[in-house]
Each structure stands twice: as C-alpha cells, then as structure tokens.
Length: 251
Image (tube, rainbow, N blue to C red; front, side):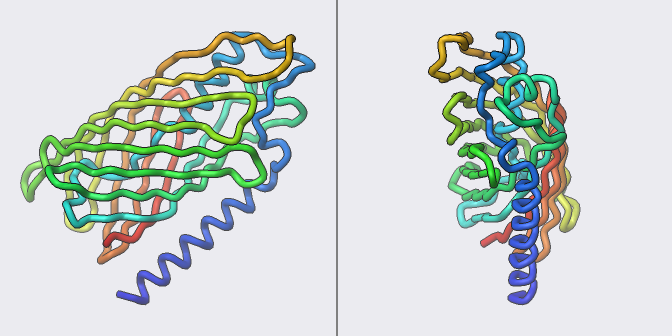
C-alpha cells in the first residue's frame, strides 16, 4: 500500500508540473489586463465576466455520499476549459488568448458529523496573474447504502485573486446523487452559479457597470477508489464546458 501511495503522489506531482509548464506556453498573454487603448463595451465585459466566473466556479469532484467524521481527502486536480476568443481578445491589453485555459489546483475535503463535509480549493495559473480560492459545505440528505443512492446539497464560494483590473466571485448551490458499485461511484448533479464582477481600471476611458449574472451547470462524474487512493473524473456542462481530473489520498 505504501508503494501505491508514493507512486500515485509522484505521478500527481509530475502531472501538476507538466500542466504548469504547459501553461507557461502562453505566459505573458495569460494575464487578465483590460485594454485601455480600445476599451471593451459593456456587452463584451458581461460576456467576459460570465466566462471568468464559470472558469473560477467551484468544481466539486466528489460523489454525494459523505466522507464520514474521520474522512479526509487531499489531492491535486486539473481543470481544462475551451474559452471563447472574442471577449478575451477584446479585453486583453496586448496578447492573444489561448484556445484552452488550464487550471491546476490543490483540493482538500474533510468529513464532519451529521453527514456534513467541508472543502477548500486553491489554484494559480503559472506565468499569469490568475489565482483563485474557494470553499464548499455539503450536506448529505441521504447518506446512501448498499441498495439506495446518496443525495446531497452543496453551497460553494470562489473568488478571483491577483487580477488588479477585475474583481470576480461566485456563489453556487447544487444538488447531486451518487451510487457506489464496488470501487466505482458514478455521480451527477445540477446547480446554479451566481457571478459578480466589476472592473477596477484607473482610466477615464473605461467606465463599465458591475455585472451580476448566473448560469446553470450540469455535472457528471465518477470516482474510482483503490485502498487509500482515489481518482475522480468530472465534466461540467454549461456556457463554458469544463473537464476535470483529480487524484487524491484519503485518510
């Protein structure tokens, strides 16, 4: 078991470094800096805000069933999303955006009594000013059993950090269901994400109104657990489709 855990952690670190170095390929064009020479319109800013909000929105990467009072998960994950070039090209000051944005993350979850789990996530895109923090509280309405599924509701919060020109944050509520079949636990959920964004550019040419918008997200995933090691895959379907993979160690 020790060899499995060491091998998995080593593989995770290699994947994290690979993704980080891959993100460097558009370093310098990765920063979110609003264009003051040809300022974007309010409509473009709203489109950009919605994309940024969905990109930083919380990705649970876990089934509905609770971890239990002694449960603790920590792992590395990667989320990739194809972005719309239009709003980003108009918003960025001096660089062409990439086709895909990759966010490597550190994700921690802890089980509490009464079917409650709490979690936190941190991500930073190397070579950019993009950093995000987030947290979650999940309550298992039904904990699940050998014959019945687990059902949970979750509330989350994320915020964008490091970007001087834009403030952005999200709140979300979702409901999910999962059912284990041996070591594999498929799950699915539906949620609503509320996005708030504002510009902070110290330039009289840019005077954009704050943005408040929302989006519905459907997510589908599966967790494979072998001893202390878990692998989770998830797809988030919304205005911005995101695909995530997580590998973690459970204690």
